[in-house]
Image 1 (spheres, rainbow, N blue to C red):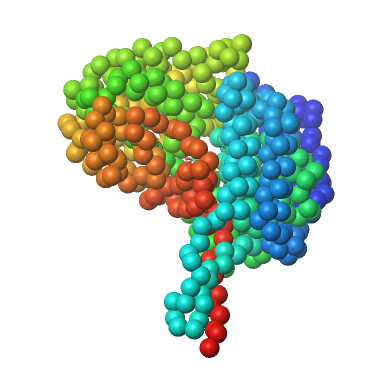
Image 2: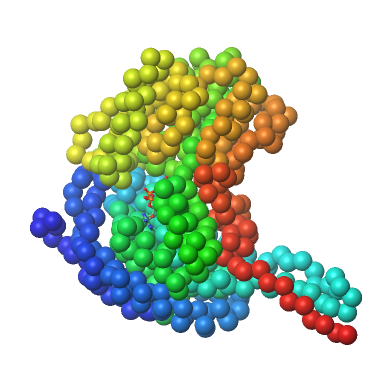
Length: 482
Ligand code: NAD
């Protein structure tokens, strides 16, 4: 580690103080070059405890603020994101290797919008009518904060994931102990400094460190009342194990493997354009990526040929940022994992790699955008999340088979249906077991709509009014007026 010249010194935010971690040193790497960026100390056990206690203390005050007061804080946070958009975008691009133009266009405005959405949403929450459901007794519902929320996020969209967790949790009156991915923490740590300019001490505490050390101690802490995780299924299982002891509330956004069902009457150009964009966006490190196609047999051959032409044109590792369609994977480990998936798929006698399938000769963790055709419904590449720039295509007989195969997945996060007949598309959408189904589109998530999974993709929602419910305790108050 001696080759790294910069050690960050005051990266944790605990009780309104920016302080240095007292745990192990962790190295942050630039995935585009494989060069070391900075060293950061993890939070120690004592600092995790201090973060939780500070959130507990701040909760006494924060839980009593009015929705309007909290909304005003959220608007200030959104304004700070706008003000520092360029800096935050550059940091995100550096730490994740993303093309900067996409971060500026998509992620930073989306993060600010989430804070603005929840600022409005918390002031107009729907609730059932207060009434005498039993004679001479008036019942009403209160939505109370839960308490201290431990929020843990992955590497793929660090700042946006921070917004998805923080905005609804704070809006609902909770306080937070937050841990970003140890691989991509830089924007969240910079954001902590901005949050500290506007929020009262202890309302948000930001810790840094690995899952096994810092994350696991956060979720076990008895002062934490809820854990919200976006991450891998195996991490979700660990959260559940830790939560059962103290019966904590949990919200799990886990993996995904989004099927793209293309019927014979689909607008093929639109399909090709969308899959080329959203199968490979963020180098496929997206739980909703358009990563597996079930194409009806009448369109399969044309789709595969046109998609191969289109994917072959995708660019990466170009000097001029705007020319890049995708960046590298987050780490060498992730790149190797993607390469292994493709190697195993390539060994199948029926599969055909039409584009890519190789690790390019670059210093960063790039993987060539890859298209694999001919794979079967029960192949590993079809069933398991690759989380890389790899799209596979399977031919199916008809829409019934496509629905049946799509629903056999253990994941249930996102899906799309492509057809010229809205009747057919709606029929399929109504049968699919996924948290979201796009029709003649893929990938788009407005702040107003819920994002959440079924089956092993988890439960609960990010975004939308419904997310406020995740972060609230519903209580019944009854007043006797006998
Ligand atoms: P990961 O589960 O390894 O890590 C996610 C976070 O959990 C990190 O901050 C990590 O430090 C922490 N963590 C790891 N082990 C922990 C433990 N034992 N206790 C507490 N915290 C722990 O996931 P990742 O590799 O960073 O991200 C990729 C995964 O995230 C993919 O599976 C992807 O599908 C999923 N993901 C899901 C969504 C969604 O909305 N459903 C969105 C993005 C990513």
